[in-house]
Image 1: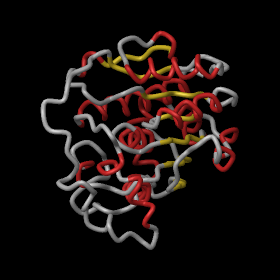
Image 2: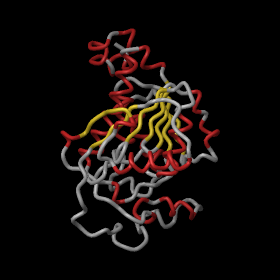
Image 3: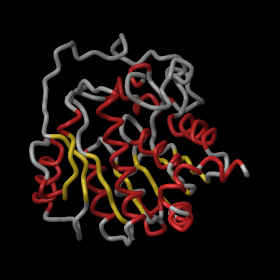
Length: 266
């Protein structure tokens, strides 16, 4: 048995050859590979997705280690999408993984050719950029799945899936709806979201990785581009909320499950 066949033997037993072939043909793009997107990417690759694009501008910070798949003491300072790509290729060396160290914005949206994908996954933190992606993704033929806020959560049993306009108890969804209404622009179609209605408060200090600016190794002396510092999670956010791995991972796995489920029920 070839290694490529052996990797997905258990998946094939459940889904069959035809479904596995369909999964391998789908093109997926993930915007944001932090606590949610990184776990989503791994689940998709382990499930047989072979054409995956990952988009994120950040480098690994020491404060990412508690919840982000590729963040370890050995990857601090590395470009997140590069570190994640390296790991994903150890799972399936035959996967076609494209890594873009970029921020998605309304201005550079054309660079990503959204119309060429079957699935678009939104795991973006920035309200402005998240709203822009949702509006544009809903104009394509691709299926969109979006993650709402995964911070300030503890109880995994409160994580749910529903249509965007039916999300309740999530501040990010509420802010998005307010933004759409204020600018009088709305998504052209419905899309599913993963969210939790739990909302705790931070009990510790709102601190960075130990200083006012991120001092993680290599973050201060990246490859020539000092602007990379502006994209460090622990140095650029006015408010940093506590987050746990089991919550962000479940968010990511649920989105991956929505993708695979959609393919299998097509």
